Length: 132
Length: 96
Image 1 (tube, one colour):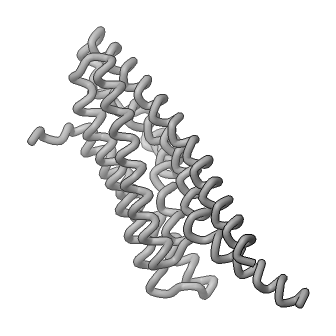
Image 2: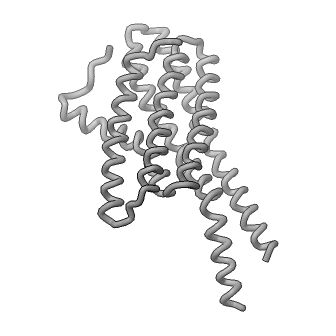
Image 3: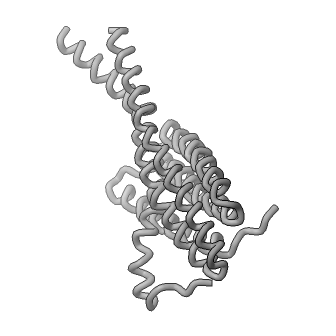
């Protein structure tokens, strides 16, 4: 098995960290508005795991695609995207069907939120990160 | 009554299928992005780390469009039919 690229590892950890923070915020909001129940927690766990796993698999695919020629890379990425979408559909369906629908859907967008927050934190930390 | 329920279920399934057409776009977009990144890395191998980071973030953003479609499809398949059938039954009961 190929070793995970340090860039992919770093970005996945960043996304996972933000997913955990935003999940905690979501759980707090559910608690405050009095709608918290165990299903909310389990739905959140399933969906957050799906979101992070999706990002990790995307990173692994990108890592593998970078070594290939243009056409193969493009095909590999399309195939991977379809498979990851199916995986997310299956995991999210479990969350919506057995747990709380809102808590199962919202965490899918946490990686996107993490990317939106990124430039703000990069500026605060002193500009762009240096490339490897 | 059965016909109305059948139409509701059919329309929900059709809507979910149509929503998932939007899932094709991110796949094509990501494929093109990665192809161009391969080209860039081939030209400047030393920029591999920076290109990979930017590409990963770009792919994640592009994928969100597909996720919107996925969410709509999930709602139409799992939540909408039950609610719509309930509304139909209540309306029928109210009307007698």
